[in-house]
Each structure stands twice: as structure tokens, then as C-alpha cells.
Image: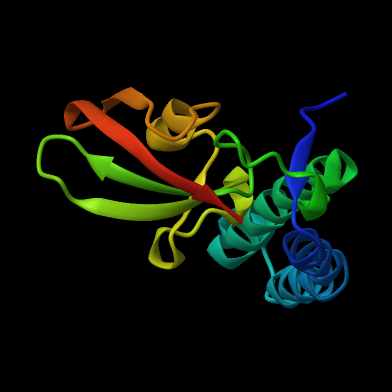
Length: 157
């Protein structure tokens, strides 16, 4: 049993779509590349064949990882999210106590994280550091840039 992860319905659908494409088109494309390389003759000196076999190994690794993630995925019911504290799928408005910069992040699963859209992983230093905090709390985070402190200004959906 792997780790259970929580996703939005959209996030899980994207993962299932990627898995399905890799299992069908991805495997078909690799099989074709291997066959084409095999047709070119001596396999002992065939770099194309080796590259295609390596790509096949990576594809199968990605497929098995995705199968595990999708198998352990649970869809979050957004109506049941407690916004009295920072939790997965909540939006946290935080202020850096050193430079007063204010940012708003949505806490999401690792696979759904996208900094450009303000979605940070629950496993990231800031994500895990503000998890469970309430409005007015100060979160002390050991980030790559050193110790940072963030005040929780607001929590919403």
C-alpha cells in the first residue's frame, strides 16, 4: 500500500488521462521504435536500439509510478474543507515577516503543484510549514534560503 494522496477531481482526471496515453500511444510508439531499430541489423552495435530500450524502461517506470499514484488517489470534497486552519486545497494569504511581501498560495498535492499559478505542494517547505496554522499564527520555515517566518493573514477556499 503506497501513500494516499488527495486530489481535486480535475487533477485526478489529468493523471488518469496521462496514464492512459502512456499505456496506449506511449507503449505503441516505443514498440515501433524498437522494431525499427531491430530492423537495422546487428543489435550489439545498435545505439538506436539501446536508446529505444532505455526509453522503454523509463516509460514503464513512469507508468508503474502513475498506476500507484492513481491507485492511491482520493478525491477531496471541497465542501468539507475546514478553513479555520491551513489545510490541503485551502488558500493561505501569508506575509513574509522580514520584507512584508504578501503572497497567496493554494496548498495542493505534489503532482498538482504549479508555482506559476500559486499552487504549492503540501510537501514543500512552505506548504508543510504553514499546514495546520490558523489566522494570526507565525510559521517558522526552514527554507533553502534560510529560516523564514510567515504570518498567516487569511485562509479561504
